[in-house]
Image (tube, rainbow, N blue to C red):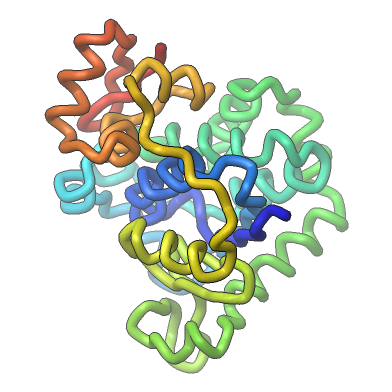
Length: 267
């Protein structure tokens, strides 16, 4: 039986994007043994959050190496339209929900604005969705209710998460999960954490779950992923430094797609 994993996140959050190498590594090692559900926090509903995000994330980019443009955004932007789009696809075309989330992240971390209809339409087209159909889905009451359920769940952390107050966000008296926060089985792991934290929980909950070893080559990893991976994501799965991962990618003839302060790679 697969182990259920719920991820609370937001496409606007550079911390969540910087944690994607951990998630790619978990997907590589455990594959179909993990059954993912992604729920939206809608961070920018809180006063000042959009302005804070608009400042950019130069420190996170330097520290974690994901392809984030470190320059400030043109203006504060709401993440709610993009969160609603992810929920709409989750409700209508669930197999594409994570792909849309990825494309929204790639575009916003390159300096786009998540409340720009053109950005959302472009991300939809990237994954083979009709932007007009996505807009119709997003305007339904059912999707609105599902988004509200996500936001409410994010603002009702489990007791174990509340015991880790420093890992939560939001104003006093209305604490919420930060992005990313995981619930694996019945165990909650709030906030930004190393991969070992998640693997320890997985091992305790499902010791029988097969764990695939590291890939034998970057080519094997890129073929498996089906999407371009950031240098930092490749490094995480290989268990290597980013410079070593880049050298391996270049030696393998992988195609480089510069973005932000680094790049994505495809086979």
